[in-house]
Length: 329
Image 1 (cartoon, one colour):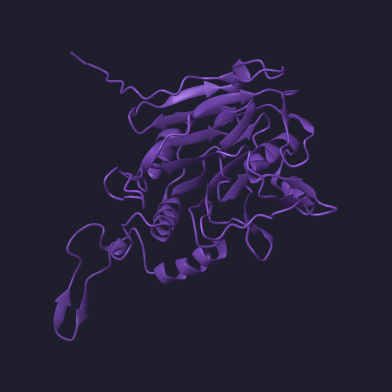
Image 2 (image 1 turned 90 degrees about the horizontal axis):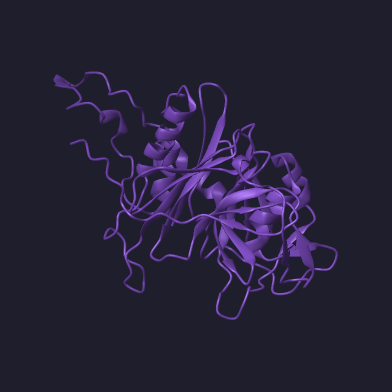
Protein backbone atom coordinates (compact mmCIF):
# COMPACT_ATOMS: atom_id res chain seq x y z
CA UNK A 1 0.00 0.00 0.00
CA UNK A 2 1.93 3.02 -1.27
CA UNK A 3 1.54 6.19 -3.33
CA UNK A 4 4.11 7.80 -5.65
CA UNK A 5 3.96 11.42 -6.83
CA UNK A 6 5.85 13.79 -9.14
CA UNK A 7 5.17 17.55 -9.30
CA UNK A 8 6.68 20.66 -10.89
CA UNK A 9 7.27 24.02 -9.22
CA UNK A 10 6.47 27.38 -10.78
CA UNK A 11 10.16 27.73 -11.65
CA UNK A 12 10.10 24.44 -13.58
CA UNK A 13 11.88 22.28 -10.99
CA UNK A 14 10.71 18.72 -10.37
CA UNK A 15 10.09 16.92 -7.09
CA UNK A 16 9.42 13.21 -6.63
CA UNK A 17 8.52 11.10 -3.63
CA UNK A 18 6.13 8.70 -2.05
CA UNK A 19 4.14 7.46 0.91
CA UNK A 20 5.45 4.16 2.28
CA UNK A 21 2.39 2.39 3.67
CA UNK A 22 3.34 -0.61 5.79
CA UNK A 23 2.29 -2.38 8.96
CA UNK A 24 5.90 -2.85 10.06
CA UNK A 25 9.36 -1.30 9.92
CA UNK A 26 12.16 -2.76 7.80
CA UNK A 27 15.09 -1.09 9.60
CA UNK A 28 14.80 1.72 7.11
CA UNK A 29 17.05 4.76 7.06
CA UNK A 30 18.27 7.34 4.59
CA UNK A 31 21.58 6.27 3.10
CA UNK A 32 24.09 7.53 0.58
CA UNK A 33 25.65 4.94 -1.72
CA UNK A 34 28.83 6.52 -3.09
CA UNK A 35 30.43 5.93 -6.44
CA UNK A 36 32.65 2.83 -6.34
CA UNK A 37 30.66 1.14 -3.55
CA UNK A 38 30.55 -2.60 -4.26
CA UNK A 39 27.96 -5.26 -3.50
CA UNK A 40 27.39 -8.82 -4.69
CA UNK A 41 24.77 -9.49 -7.35
CA UNK A 42 22.83 -12.47 -5.96
CA UNK A 43 21.78 -13.65 -9.44
CA UNK A 44 25.21 -13.80 -11.11
CA UNK A 45 27.39 -13.90 -8.02
CA UNK A 46 29.51 -11.08 -9.46
CA UNK A 47 30.57 -7.96 -7.60
CA UNK A 48 28.83 -4.80 -8.84
CA UNK A 49 30.42 -1.35 -8.60
CA UNK A 50 28.14 1.64 -8.14
CA UNK A 51 28.73 4.17 -10.94
CA UNK A 52 26.70 7.18 -9.74
CA UNK A 53 26.18 8.38 -6.18
CA UNK A 54 22.69 7.65 -4.80
CA UNK A 55 20.64 8.93 -1.86
CA UNK A 56 17.47 7.23 -0.69
CA UNK A 57 15.50 5.35 1.92
CA UNK A 58 16.22 1.68 2.38
CA UNK A 59 17.85 -0.99 4.48
CA UNK A 60 21.07 -2.99 4.33
CA UNK A 61 21.39 -6.79 4.46
CA UNK A 62 24.90 -8.27 4.43
CA UNK A 63 26.38 -5.00 3.08
CA UNK A 64 23.82 -5.08 0.27
CA UNK A 65 21.68 -1.90 0.04
CA UNK A 66 17.98 -2.50 -0.61
CA UNK A 67 16.36 0.76 -1.72
CA UNK A 68 12.68 1.68 -1.45
CA UNK A 69 12.95 5.10 -3.13
CA UNK A 70 15.99 7.08 -4.16
CA UNK A 71 17.64 9.45 -6.63
CA UNK A 72 21.11 9.70 -8.09
CA UNK A 73 23.50 12.64 -8.27
CA UNK A 74 22.09 13.85 -11.62
CA UNK A 75 18.43 13.86 -10.52
CA UNK A 76 17.11 10.56 -11.87
CA UNK A 77 14.73 9.08 -9.28
CA UNK A 78 12.91 5.79 -8.73
CA UNK A 79 10.52 4.22 -6.21
CA UNK A 80 9.23 0.68 -5.79
CA UNK A 81 5.57 0.21 -4.82
CA UNK A 82 3.68 -2.91 -3.82
CA UNK A 83 2.26 -4.87 -6.77
CA UNK A 84 1.02 -7.98 -4.97
CA UNK A 85 -0.98 -10.45 -7.03
CA UNK A 86 0.23 -9.02 -10.35
CA UNK A 87 4.04 -8.99 -10.22
CA UNK A 88 5.79 -12.04 -11.62
CA UNK A 89 9.54 -12.60 -11.75
CA UNK A 90 11.37 -15.31 -13.67
CA UNK A 91 12.40 -18.39 -11.70
CA UNK A 92 15.71 -18.71 -13.56
CA UNK A 93 17.97 -16.29 -15.45
CA UNK A 94 17.11 -15.83 -19.13
CA UNK A 95 19.97 -16.39 -21.56
CA UNK A 96 21.01 -13.29 -23.45
CA UNK A 97 19.45 -10.92 -20.91
CA UNK A 98 20.87 -8.74 -18.16
CA UNK A 99 19.40 -10.68 -15.22
CA UNK A 100 18.99 -8.92 -11.87
CA UNK A 101 16.89 -9.40 -8.75
CA UNK A 102 13.89 -7.06 -8.28
CA UNK A 103 15.37 -5.58 -5.09
CA UNK A 104 18.32 -4.36 -7.17
CA UNK A 105 16.17 -2.65 -9.80
CA UNK A 106 16.32 0.83 -8.22
CA UNK A 107 20.08 0.68 -7.81
CA UNK A 108 20.47 -0.64 -11.37
CA UNK A 109 18.39 2.28 -12.68
CA UNK A 110 20.20 4.96 -10.71
CA UNK A 111 23.73 3.62 -11.02
CA UNK A 112 23.65 3.15 -14.78
CA UNK A 113 21.45 5.92 -16.18
CA UNK A 114 20.88 9.68 -16.20
CA UNK A 115 17.54 10.01 -18.02
CA UNK A 116 14.29 8.13 -18.44
CA UNK A 117 15.09 7.56 -22.12
CA UNK A 118 18.33 5.83 -21.15
CA UNK A 119 16.41 3.64 -18.69
CA UNK A 120 13.91 2.64 -21.38
CA UNK A 121 16.73 1.53 -23.66
CA UNK A 122 18.39 -0.41 -20.84
CA UNK A 123 15.18 -2.23 -19.96
CA UNK A 124 15.08 -3.70 -23.48
CA UNK A 125 17.90 -6.02 -22.38
CA UNK A 126 16.76 -6.53 -18.77
CA UNK A 127 15.15 -9.47 -16.97
CA UNK A 128 13.97 -9.65 -13.36
CA UNK A 129 14.67 -12.91 -11.54
CA UNK A 130 13.06 -14.24 -8.36
CA UNK A 131 16.29 -14.64 -6.39
CA UNK A 132 15.92 -13.91 -2.63
CA UNK A 133 18.74 -12.04 -0.97
CA UNK A 134 18.74 -14.72 1.75
CA UNK A 135 16.54 -17.58 2.93
CA UNK A 136 14.75 -15.38 5.47
CA UNK A 137 13.85 -12.53 3.09
CA UNK A 138 11.42 -13.29 0.26
CA UNK A 139 11.42 -11.14 -2.86
CA UNK A 140 8.93 -8.27 -2.61
CA UNK A 141 6.28 -8.04 -5.32
CA UNK A 142 6.78 -4.55 -6.77
CA UNK A 143 6.35 -2.26 -9.71
CA UNK A 144 8.31 0.96 -10.15
CA UNK A 145 7.97 4.61 -11.09
CA UNK A 146 11.03 6.26 -12.65
CA UNK A 147 11.34 9.99 -13.36
CA UNK A 148 14.12 12.40 -14.30
CA UNK A 149 14.59 16.10 -13.61
CA UNK A 150 12.86 17.05 -16.87
CA UNK A 151 9.66 15.54 -15.45
CA UNK A 152 9.57 12.63 -17.88
CA UNK A 153 8.25 9.55 -16.09
CA UNK A 154 7.58 5.87 -16.71
CA UNK A 155 6.08 2.93 -14.85
CA UNK A 156 7.82 -0.45 -15.08
CA UNK A 157 5.77 -3.60 -14.46
CA UNK A 158 6.80 -7.24 -14.76
CA UNK A 159 3.76 -9.53 -15.01
CA UNK A 160 3.32 -13.13 -16.12
CA UNK A 161 2.89 -11.87 -19.68
CA UNK A 162 5.88 -9.57 -20.08
CA UNK A 163 8.05 -6.74 -18.79
CA UNK A 164 6.17 -3.55 -19.69
CA UNK A 165 7.20 0.10 -19.71
CA UNK A 166 4.32 2.60 -19.55
CA UNK A 167 4.80 6.30 -20.20
CA UNK A 168 3.43 8.05 -17.11
CA UNK A 169 1.76 11.31 -18.13
CA UNK A 170 -0.43 11.56 -15.02
CA UNK A 171 2.58 11.71 -12.65
CA UNK A 172 1.31 9.33 -9.96
CA UNK A 173 1.35 5.64 -9.04
CA UNK A 174 -0.25 3.47 -6.38
CA UNK A 175 -0.51 -0.32 -6.30
CA UNK A 176 -2.41 -3.03 -8.17
CA UNK A 177 -4.06 -3.48 -10.62
CA UNK A 178 -1.81 -2.62 -13.55
CA UNK A 179 -1.02 1.00 -14.43
CA UNK A 180 -3.01 0.93 -17.69
CA UNK A 181 -6.09 -0.24 -15.74
CA UNK A 182 -5.77 2.75 -13.39
CA UNK A 183 -5.62 5.12 -16.37
CA UNK A 184 -8.76 3.60 -17.88
CA UNK A 185 -10.52 3.87 -14.52
CA UNK A 186 -9.87 7.63 -14.40
CA UNK A 187 -12.41 8.00 -17.19
CA UNK A 188 -15.11 7.23 -14.61
CA UNK A 189 -14.26 10.50 -12.84
CA UNK A 190 -14.39 13.03 -15.67
CA UNK A 191 -17.10 14.94 -13.79
CA UNK A 192 -14.81 15.86 -10.88
CA UNK A 193 -13.96 19.54 -10.70
CA UNK A 194 -12.79 22.01 -8.03
CA UNK A 195 -15.61 24.35 -9.12
CA UNK A 196 -19.03 23.93 -7.53
CA UNK A 197 -21.85 23.37 -10.04
CA UNK A 198 -24.02 26.32 -10.98
CA UNK A 199 -27.62 26.66 -9.95
CA UNK A 200 -29.96 24.74 -12.24
CA UNK A 201 -33.58 23.64 -12.51
CA UNK A 202 -35.14 20.20 -12.64
CA UNK A 203 -38.56 20.97 -13.95
CA UNK A 204 -39.77 23.86 -11.83
CA UNK A 205 -37.54 22.95 -8.89
CA UNK A 206 -34.42 25.10 -8.42
CA UNK A 207 -31.33 23.16 -7.35
CA UNK A 208 -28.06 24.60 -6.11
CA UNK A 209 -24.93 23.29 -4.44
CA UNK A 210 -25.17 22.90 -0.68
CA UNK A 211 -21.67 24.29 -0.21
CA UNK A 212 -18.12 24.56 -1.47
CA UNK A 213 -16.69 21.26 -2.72
CA UNK A 214 -19.81 19.98 -4.45
CA UNK A 215 -17.81 19.56 -7.65
CA UNK A 216 -15.83 16.76 -6.01
CA UNK A 217 -18.86 14.70 -4.98
CA UNK A 218 -18.12 11.10 -5.86
CA UNK A 219 -14.37 11.14 -5.39
CA UNK A 220 -13.49 7.91 -3.56
CA UNK A 221 -12.34 8.41 0.01
CA UNK A 222 -11.26 4.92 1.04
CA UNK A 223 -7.71 3.60 1.41
CA UNK A 224 -7.80 1.12 -1.50
CA UNK A 225 -5.13 1.47 -4.18
CA UNK A 226 -7.70 2.24 -6.88
CA UNK A 227 -9.21 5.06 -4.81
CA UNK A 228 -5.88 6.57 -3.78
CA UNK A 229 -4.85 6.66 -7.44
CA UNK A 230 -7.95 8.68 -8.32
CA UNK A 231 -7.50 11.07 -5.39
CA UNK A 232 -3.82 11.78 -5.92
CA UNK A 233 -4.29 12.12 -9.70
CA UNK A 234 -7.15 14.57 -9.11
CA UNK A 235 -5.30 16.77 -6.64
CA UNK A 236 -2.11 16.73 -8.74
CA UNK A 237 -4.05 17.79 -11.83
CA UNK A 238 -5.71 20.74 -10.10
CA UNK A 239 -2.84 21.82 -7.87
CA UNK A 240 -1.50 25.28 -8.76
CA UNK A 241 2.23 25.36 -9.42
CA UNK A 242 3.89 26.74 -6.31
CA UNK A 243 6.66 29.36 -6.28
CA UNK A 244 9.87 28.51 -4.44
CA UNK A 245 11.42 25.30 -3.13
CA UNK A 246 10.13 25.55 0.44
CA UNK A 247 6.54 26.13 -0.60
CA UNK A 248 6.72 23.42 -3.27
CA UNK A 249 8.05 20.87 -0.78
CA UNK A 250 5.40 21.88 1.76
CA UNK A 251 2.69 21.46 -0.88
CA UNK A 252 4.16 18.09 -1.87
CA UNK A 253 3.78 16.74 1.65
CA UNK A 254 0.24 18.14 1.90
CA UNK A 255 -0.62 16.19 -1.24
CA UNK A 256 0.80 12.98 0.19
CA UNK A 257 -1.16 13.63 3.40
CA UNK A 258 -4.31 13.61 1.26
CA UNK A 259 -3.78 9.89 0.60
CA UNK A 260 -1.90 8.84 3.74
CA UNK A 261 -3.04 5.91 5.86
CA UNK A 262 -3.87 6.42 9.53
CA UNK A 263 -3.42 3.38 11.76
CA UNK A 264 -6.66 1.63 12.59
CA UNK A 265 -8.30 2.29 9.24
CA UNK A 266 -6.91 -0.84 7.58
CA UNK A 267 -5.84 -4.17 9.07
CA UNK A 268 -3.67 -6.70 7.28
CA UNK A 269 -4.60 -10.38 7.02
CA UNK A 270 -2.39 -10.88 10.09
CA UNK A 271 -4.37 -8.29 12.05
CA UNK A 272 -1.62 -5.65 11.92
CA UNK A 273 -2.43 -1.95 11.57
CA UNK A 274 -1.39 -0.54 8.21
CA UNK A 275 -0.16 3.05 8.22
CA UNK A 276 2.04 5.51 6.37
CA UNK A 277 5.41 4.65 7.87
CA UNK A 278 7.12 7.59 6.17
CA UNK A 279 6.60 10.14 3.42
CA UNK A 280 9.44 11.36 1.21
CA UNK A 281 10.14 14.16 -1.24
CA UNK A 282 13.24 14.44 -3.41
CA UNK A 283 14.46 17.71 -4.89
CA UNK A 284 15.77 16.34 -8.17
CA UNK A 285 17.64 19.53 -9.03
CA UNK A 286 19.49 20.03 -5.75
CA UNK A 287 19.88 16.42 -4.61
CA UNK A 288 18.15 16.93 -1.26
CA UNK A 289 16.10 14.10 0.26
CA UNK A 290 13.25 15.18 2.57
CA UNK A 291 11.21 12.85 4.75
CA UNK A 292 8.85 12.72 7.70
CA UNK A 293 7.72 9.70 9.69
CA UNK A 294 4.45 8.50 11.18
CA UNK A 295 5.66 9.44 14.65
CA UNK A 296 7.49 12.67 13.76
CA UNK A 297 5.77 15.25 11.55
CA UNK A 298 8.87 17.42 11.27
CA UNK A 299 10.34 17.42 7.76
CA UNK A 300 13.94 16.21 7.85
CA UNK A 301 16.38 17.07 5.04
CA UNK A 302 19.63 15.47 3.87
CA UNK A 303 21.69 17.09 1.10
CA UNK A 304 23.71 14.46 -0.75
CA UNK A 305 26.07 17.09 -2.15
CA UNK A 306 27.27 17.98 1.35
CA UNK A 307 28.64 14.45 1.69
CA UNK A 308 31.49 12.49 0.14
CA UNK A 309 30.06 10.97 -3.05
CA UNK A 310 32.96 8.70 -3.87
CA UNK A 311 34.18 5.89 -1.64
CA UNK A 312 33.71 2.33 -0.50
CA UNK A 313 31.42 2.78 2.53
CA UNK A 314 27.75 3.59 2.92
CA UNK A 315 26.73 6.73 4.83
CA UNK A 316 23.62 5.95 6.89
CA UNK A 317 21.60 8.63 8.70
CA UNK A 318 19.54 8.05 11.82
CA UNK A 319 15.84 7.47 11.09
CA UNK A 320 13.99 9.99 13.25
CA UNK A 321 10.80 8.86 14.96
CA UNK A 322 10.57 11.01 18.11
CA UNK A 323 7.97 13.75 17.79
CA UNK A 324 9.50 17.22 17.72
CA UNK A 325 7.37 19.99 19.22
CA UNK A 326 8.11 23.69 18.80
CA UNK A 327 7.06 25.19 22.14
CA UNK A 328 6.16 28.88 21.81
CA UNK A 329 5.95 29.76 25.51
